[in-house]
Image 1: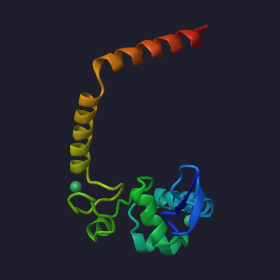
Image 2: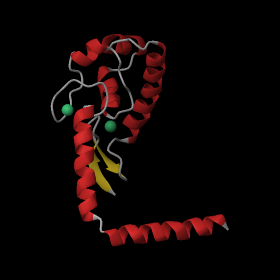
Image 3: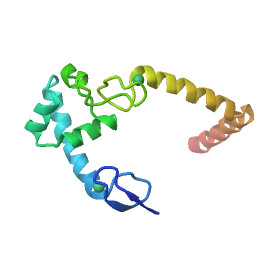
Image 4: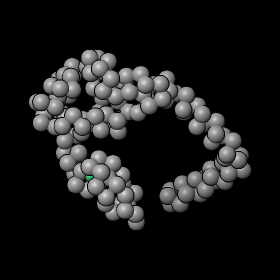
Length: 138
Ligand SMILES: [Zn+2]
Ligand SMILES: [Zn+2]
């Protein structure tokens, strides 16, 4: 167990692996549902409008976008640079990177995984998997 700083309210809390404290998590989850439902009904709403109509702070909406849980479709909000790709700084509407950069990272990650994971390891893993499947089939 570690004491870390909540990535949302910046207060220190005891973490079992989460980056957000319990208080924030609860609030964000509740707000997420509110905003998600609102966007579902109002697909073209921009950030200001969403925040105004739902009473959810822009900070939370932005946070949810970064987490990839919300996608804002309004081109104006996206072009306004609410959320920028962490690599090339292009405006995006969800997550931390644009599609192009995400693609590049995925390729790099795959490459480094291929070099780090030996074929031997792969074989063992699939053998274990088969064994596990057998047990489950009993
Ligand atoms: Zn917090
Ligand atoms: Zn990018």
